[in-house]
Length: 525
Image (cartoon, rainbow, N blue to C red):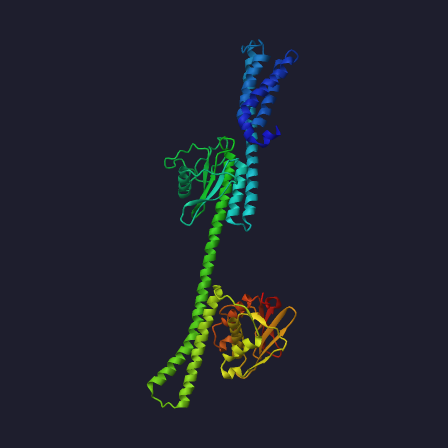
């Protein structure tokens, strides 16, 4: 009994049988007391039976029970017994009244029971959707969502096969996931029907809605599918969004061979709609990410154009002016002046080449094409090479203090020279024309530290976390040239070597850039 109340489909299948058996059993129980009770009292017992059947089986079985009780009371408990003839005319009024009251009680009680069953089904469907949607809001992949949907739909519908079909890059539907251990049908007819469902955003094969049901399908239903018959055991549901049709949910025939039930498929449709919302959200997130990437690319492009145009335009303008003066020959040129102008040309060319090399370095680092080739080197050897690239005037301002027991460092020689060039150049530019720049190093049991410090204005604390960003130039950069990518390149190279770089403030003023390489990275392997 309890199972029948919890599962209304059992009642739908056996309701009329329950009504007939109940009336027959009641008649057998009542019959021995026919001589001891008044004939009208049996009507009350039969009415009680109608109410029980209505509460158990629903309205239609209750009406059947009322009709059967009418004939049973007449045949067995109203004289003359064993016939449907009524001897007392007053019994006709009782029979008619009994039938009307029985039908009314069966109808009213059955409607209440059916509404209770509908409310219970909706409550279960709501609980299922709440549980399913709660899992959808978590960060899960599309394949996980498909597997989760298949498991829920299989549990609800008892279908032999459930599959999620999504379009591939060419637009053809492909099976993303299916019921484990089951081969779903891949006939040309099913493929044609699935493609039709996706293009037209209409479901095919949905069961008829019961007359007592409320509402309608929360999805478009096809009544004519391009000549394909709809009297089929399987069902195809479109995974449609507000902007596009993403795919198809295929629900195969039930494993027991019986047709699908309306409440089950309605819940499956609701789950399919939840997945459609998930697909739409993923699509919108992808569009938003693409838009953010485009905005970031536009911002970087504008910043790059601004920085590069200034950094390249200045030496080009100087070169153009110098070469034009040399070609025109309006002024007398002696060897000393020519050497001075050519030295300026050399410096402008070096500055131009440095800017171009920095841009190339950054591009290679971001594309992971500039992989470090690690070998053991003396830090002093790398420092000497970096100092040799500086102009003589700048080179004289740099002093180095290195301990004699400093271990060798395992780095890419060219990349580490580039790191020191950027740090030294940064310190020389921002510390003033006569301020010294110091280079030092030390070693601990776990790491080797190298630093470059200056006596410039220093870097405000709020800017220290951003100076290693591409194209970022702090407040002090307004009076100095540069593209704002030297420190970004330095940070990337250090990261590639497994190290870290940070900024420290020194007293009374200035900044120290510190690089730390783990000792574990210094062995040959």
